[in-house]
Structures are given as structure tokens and as C-alpha cells.
Length: 522
Image (tube, rainbow, N blue to C red; front, top):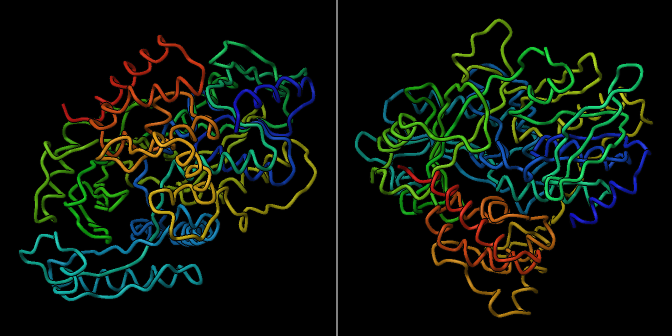
């Protein structure tokens, strides 16, 4: 992907209308762009920040059916998610893999209770199963989880779900859309929705935030896939639009690998706030979360609340033999869920709101897709494009994404730390071989080499330090202090690639350092 070429494609389109213009470059928007482009529709994707800057980069890193939704009785959502989980592993095996989970049992009734529940989970997975669940003895549980709290431990139940790297998948989805002819742009805002004489939307005014250039683009259908900012976008078309989104904040704490010391995750099915808590291995670290706290308004960089940090630390301490403290936290990342507001509800208990998606078409013809979860992005996109094709009077074309290989598809298992690049790993390695300094690790506490930064700028539209260290690599989420330490070196690499001057480099380092400090406990 080359941003300059993408901007030129917008200019040369002129007054010829795009079939579908998608506003929002997170999981949902990227999924819609992939689906639309692979059906042959002329597709433009606009993201005002970087791809995945919001919720899509801040997940629990799980591709899962949702055990909690099973308990709530939402069988259809669980079955849909389990099917999509299976399709994702088949279509992006370099990014999605099986992860065993253990539900530790400390009370006599927990083993049969959760054992039966997980058998139902297995049955609902049908042919998309990742593995069968079974009950573990105390000894087997300790063998899988050597750092689990042992006092009162009776055993456990093991089941299987999926794990992924969310923004590596998102990056490859955006690249997949581009591979199939879509035009994709980050740092490009839809600043106005345009109407025809009939009062219906017929385009957008976009602004290239890097150059300040504004361009009118026509569209047969405009899709609002802005997640937590859904209502803000809807009010560009209908200022009096009622609120659809009830935002909920969740935090994750990242620790050294030694807190889990296993390739098996822990799932605590019932915590004091009613949510599930996970402790999972991820990129050589341990991620623990999450919370569910209703908030008033969305933002790109939400802050963790002190009570959330305390809750995760206290709950994790009940299940880990080495109780984590604030001093052990390497990074704190916070995400906001774009939950669909319950009709007549007060929004005070967001953990009970459905994770199903909703499609809404307002009086101006703006098509909004909101809700859902990462795992079901593909199905959400299919549903959205089906509606968009009808709304925009586009020629019928079948959805092909159920069997579409995501960019980078590879079933190779010998790629090491570059596995998340899949078939692109060869390109990253070639950069490292051409220049010895690019083969060097950026920091001893991080799994990244300098070549990955150069690759991100040249091929993945990385424009800022935040892009490179938060989303193309996951340095900021894994270890905020280490990310701050390498920021000057990474800025040097990016400035050279982007042709930026010393002022840009200094401003980037200062801005990123301020940002990264928010990922550390005060």
C-alpha cells in the first residue's frame, strides 16, 4: 500500500461515483471494504486517524465464541462466532491459532458445572471445533498452569478457543481490500456528508489531514462503520439522531511472561463485577483483563480508572501464585466497546448488553453498522454489503469472503517472530539481509527488529511513531517503557523513509513519549 498512490486514485476518480464509500478503518470498516472490493464494487475506505486507532487495536486478543454469551442464552451469537472463528483460522492461519484455556476449580460443583457447559460449547462449534474440552485433575491442572494459585485447587476444565493479533489482522485486511482494488486511506476524514437534490446522500467531502486538501467524492452508498464514534457520524447526516451506542470501557494489564509461564490461558468465568477475566500468553508476555465500565463519551485514548486497575490486580492475585502488583505492570491498554444501546435501558449495566450487530439506515440513506465483535467482523461485513448493494442499486454479486485468504496467508510454522507477517515475512527478512543494522533488535525486551519499521512505512502506510509502535508492531502495548526508549531510533528510521526533517522527528518523539506515559500506572 502506498498512500500517495491512494490519494492520486481518489483525484483521478473525479465525478465518477464510487459504489461504496466506507467511513471508519477499524475491523468492521476494513471487513466491509474487503467484502465490497471482492464483489467487484468500486470501494473507498476513509479513516480519519490510523487504521485501528480506536477499539480494534485494544481487544483481549481472542477469536472466540464467547462462553459468557452461552451463559446468557444467546446461542445464535455463540454459534455464529464459533463458525467465524473457524473461518478465520482457515483464512488467516498466520494470525489466528488455537489456544487452550483452563477454568480452575476450587469448589466441588465447579468441575461438573463448567464441564457440562464446555461440552455444549464443543457441540455448538460443530465442524469448526478447535479441540474437545475435558475435566482435569489437580495434577493435570498444575502441569498446564504451574503458576496457578494452589490453595484449595481441586482441578480444572480445559477447552479450546482462538487467539490472534488484532491490528496485524486488521493491517492485512486493509491490504486484502487494496489487493482487490479498493482505495484505502488513513489520516483522511469525512468532514461532510453530501446530498443530492432528492435529499439523499450522494457523496462525502473528504480532507487529507496530512496535506489539508479537500476533495468531493460521489458515492452510490455511504457506510458508517465508525464504531464508538457511530453517533457522531450519524449526526453529520441527521443532527437530531438518537443515540445508538452505549460505550463501555475495558482495561488490560500486561506483565512479564513469568506470571503465567505457560502456553495455556486462564479463564475465570465469574468475577465480582459479573465479567469473565482472562490471563493469556501473548507475544511472550501475560495479558490480564478485562473490566466493563460504562462511560459517558468515547475517545481515542481512554484512561484507565484506578478502581479498574485495582480490580484486575486483585482478581488476578486470587488465581496466580505470584500476585501481580502495580510495579509489575509493563503496560495498560484501554478499549471502548461500541455496544448497541438497549431500547428503554439506562445503560448502567453494559455487561448485559448484546454483542450482536445492528444495521440502521436513516432518512438520508446513511447505512450504519454498529455493535458485534472482532470475531464476527466478516459476517457483519457480508450483511452490511448486502444492504449497501440494495440501497445503492448495485449489480448483484455474491459474497466470497468465507473462503477468501487474507493477505499474507501462510501455513508455514517456521517464521519465528515474523509469523504475523505470513508470506510477507520473506520481504521483511530481505530488508534485514540487505542492511545489517535493520536486522538488529529494537530493544532486548521486545521481539521486533528495525526492518519491521521500514517494512511498515513502505508497505503498510505507517505514518507516525504511534502507528509503528502501537499497531504495526505492538511495542507500546507490550512494554511502554521499552517503547519510549526506542522512539528516537524508530523516528530516525521513519524520517529517512518518509523524507521528514528534524522538526518532524523531534515532534514525533515528544508526542509519542507523552502518549506512552498514559500506558503506565501513575
